[in-house]
Length: 187
View 1 (cartoon, rainbow, N blue to C red):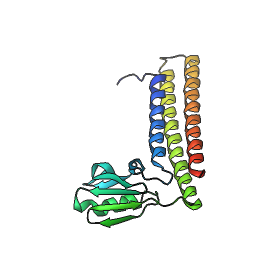
View 2: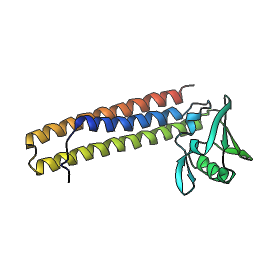
View 3: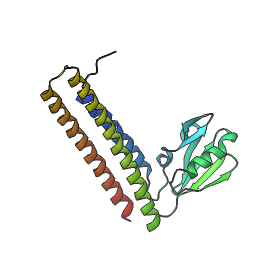
View 4: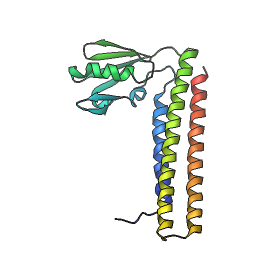
């Protein structure tokens, strides 16, 4: 079995991946304008597995407040409808054959609050992912300390570095959430 290695840069890189995913998810929360990225987080139950929507359909923006989803396989239309409805994006598809049309609703106060809740959910998922990376890093340090590969002092110092990286990553998540919340709530 390979000896675990403590690599702070690897831990930071994994935390940045969580932040990049959050950035994509928040980018998909559009404030009243149609955008193909709005549908990026949606996965469809297709062919016995979960697939991103863009792998079973073509997404286009025919009008500023309309998204068109052209499903390639007629048998997948219902699954795509179901995935969009379950996405909590507040979009109701109207289906015409293999084409689903999604009207982007005007952002009223209630819709803005819904979007803020979705943004908070994404941010919390990112925080949890960052904490998982921290836990993994600390577990490696404990194992190295237990196996006498590093001293107790080195273990403590490294654990502090991991915690500092975690705090920075969570602060960045909070900043991104605050920015997106302002964007959603201001008219």
